[in-house]
Amino acid sequence: MCLTDGRNLAWYDREAARINLLSEDRKDDVLEVLGPFLTGPVTVGPPPVPTPAELARLTLHPDDDLAPNRPGEALLVALDRDPGPSHRLRADPRRRALTAEQTVGDALDRLDGAGWHALHSVPLPGGDRVHHLVIGPGGLFALHALYARKQKVTVADPMVSLGRREPYPLLRRVRADADRASHALTAEVHPVLVLVAPSDVVIPGPVREVRVLRDTEVAGLARLGGVLKPADVEALHAMARDRRVWGAAG
Image (tube, rainbow, N blue to C red; front, side, top):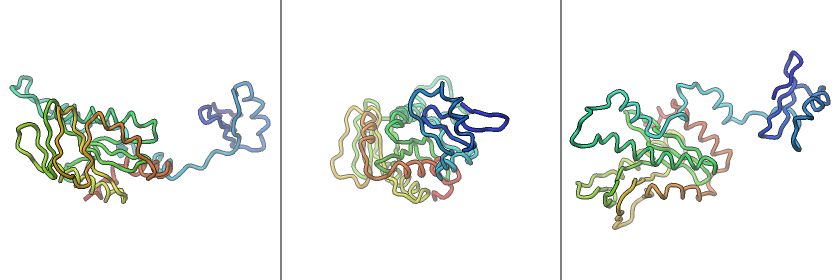
């Protein structure tokens, strides 16, 4: 609610329970007018000074803001441009990959109320991308989502195999994506491989650096803490959502 007499005098932020005064000499008049609308104790004073993170968000051009990206944004755009043949003997692998990213992305978005922020389809130079970047009290994590529905997954660093398929060195890419994110953000980013709906997961030996999770375990990241303060989380999120930052990801 904004109070004005031809020029702005104050506004009432109900959610923050705060009256922001632009004219201190009219304080009594403002309180008299707003009194009937106040439902409890409020803070009265000049508007708070924006934090660096808030300033960065306010000055970020919408075209450069990655925060609105949906889980699987890059795949959604690709499928919209080229849906592929309507009849196929085999399912389009892009749609399976999209299902994986949407499943993981939805789980990450539910962490927002716990002080975490998630970004999806973060572009890297050369056409690569980080499926999901999540920032919170427990640090920064780059998540790679792998569709594994009803498949037995074997993770033998750096190789990953689904069912009877030939293993491939997926963990190298997962680590490389996290390293590139670390370089762009000048902060440590931890690599995570998320297996979506596997029937079984076998890890015969130690896996270097990479966390291997099922999609049902992603919510457990919210229990991690003690690494970043809230102000640091907000600053890193403001930096990471700027598309231009990722041009330095190497």
